[in-house]
Length: 162
Image (cartoon, rainbow, N blue to C red):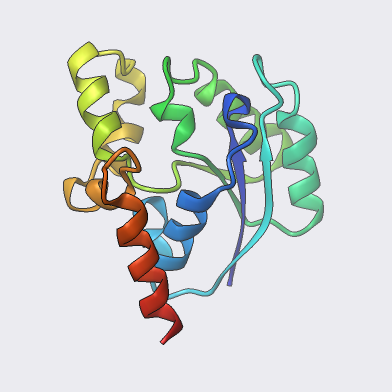
């Protein structure tokens, strides 16, 4: 079993986590690697806002609850601009707290793929993180700007209940 924590960017502090938790449930995006494993989400919190005032506290708390790996939410890359501290936070947590960090949760939604491509604002040192989440086949499924998104999600959830 993998016990994971999710840290989101504070600019999304009211996010309900729907896409992240959907990706965990369906083993999409960064959670593909757990396709044959049971996963328990043991924590979900924000970084605390720039420059990450909550990173150390949250990661230490997740470690105390037995986290195996912390995922930085896709929103840390998808936001405008992408979080400039991802590598700093990742190195701090891995070296000083002793917990592995993965970048990303759900696949990058189509609208973000297109917008970032158009404005070319993904830092070159983040390209490998971005590429791991940029699956065009999964992107549409997570694009909540689509007119049919809510209806499609509703039908999918009803199907799971049956």
